[in-house]
Amino acid sequence: MPIPLRRKRIVGINYSWVVHQPFFCQFLGVFSPGETIDFTPFLRLIQQKFRYGSTFCLRQQPDESRSFSSVRMASTQCLDLSVGYNTIYENYTRDRKQNLKRAVSANWTVADSTDPVPLSVLFQENHEAGIEGGVAVWAYNSLQNLIRELIARNLITLRYACRNGRIEAGALFVQEGNRIIYLFNSASEVGRRGNARTLLIDQVIREHAGSPLLFDFESPEKPSIREFYQSFGASEEPFYEVRWNRLNFLERTLRQLLS
Image (tube, rainbow, N blue to C red):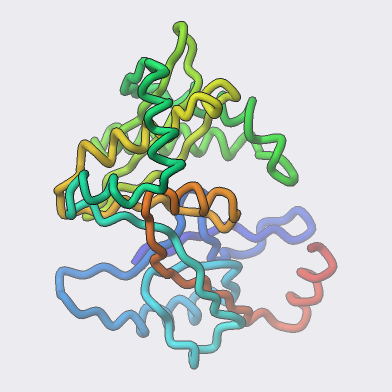
């Protein structure tokens, strides 16, 4: 079971490791060669080892009787690709079908790439302003490092849609186990109006349709984005966000003063 950690700083001093869900990773879980998994001992040991869990997202449902400060059910959205493309396409909404036709007729040039920089630049120029507090430089660096590592492991498809020699949209798909994860995307105004991301998503769905795979949109909670993914016929799959706090009184007070 992977445990994501972040160094807690108090008054500018590195203080202790806390459990904190990393960027570009919606949820984690216990994995085993066996078919049945009891992950309660893992959670017990994590809470013993790390007294503060800022946020930890799990695929498996935890026992709420454990000493968590909170347990919240969230969800991603997934498509079963095993049913074949014709069945999947029939479940697209009318608007999604129309926008896909428009994207096809727009004659986008689509190309796979190993260069993560255009994806980050597109996001920075077209999406960052809509994020409260902006996006730190280290987050972009982390994304680019992640993409390079995934490329080295042959786990991703990084695909761009171009017009007149200019990249207008990009999408990052990661295949892990029985999932294809729509991990990251960005588009310019031209890309959005031209439905480029609809085309990129549909291409990957079409390429893997009929395989025993799930297409995971890794959906955030923003309603407009969830509606977009639902228009492909995606259904909800739950995961669970847990938090805990076993800090002593002084540590709790300092945290409240500095937060």
